[in-house]
Image (tube, rainbow, N blue to C red; front, side, top):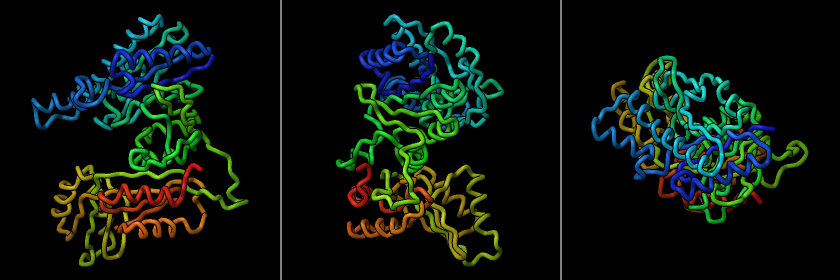
Length: 405
């Protein structure tokens, strides 16, 4: 009898009807001879009363500058409520279930409030419950640090909880249940031609998640890849088999040039481009000074380009004011361009394939889209542009590369 970890998102536990569908999924897995651990997110989305954002709005209404420790304390409540309600719903369906906080499930973290990392998991209690035929319903997104404080794992952290528990328990697979059929070749809300994918490699899924795909959290994919635990992205409200994320389709890149080097198109919005003039600064460590100062201020940057006379990168719009204040304090001349977005093409087998960048540039130029900046890795090419061009760019690149066919 194997172990399966099933994670259910906020829409999956938002109502009695949806909880009934969750119970059916759990029953089916148990009926197939599996032991099941369930991980849950908070119920629904703002303005639902127990959604994470609603709880954070509540505490912010009492204090504008809420300490990170207190933010985590209240943010963790949404998942605890979901776990108690779903465990009770499972019991009403005849299953033996028990709700658990992250700490009760053995999850210990570092001390980084609001974006903690899991440091260890003691699975002894979970294993005991499974042996007794009990379904543990674990509050996702949370753990406890060495000081005994509740910590949260950042947005999408329930995915991380599920993947980490699956790895620790040596589960056969982790199923991520959400309100979509699985992984698409692009966001179908802006690319109507986006196609469903039955199988995606760990590498491609991690890259897509890091570059804007919201279907699963990047850390969850990284944990699953490291432990070689298959991830299955499925729809709570249908019987779709979903998308399997594992080592991916086997292809001999060395023997032939693949017709479809791109697996998917992703996008992000809400970013600001920063361009710093360092031409008048003496010393070889000016760029490093900039990077260190931003890191010390807790500002995450991406799409970094370093030149002898300038430094370019992007930050989230929410960090733009702090970035400007930091650079002004350092005495740099700089410019910012707000209201930007990125569109990326992703594909593990792009590596070593000539002409992908030229196709990207041509497709965007033919669509009349200005490319502000680019960055690339072995598995992806990202283009920065005005936010209003992002949807057209995603459609143009999807049409050019036709991923998933």
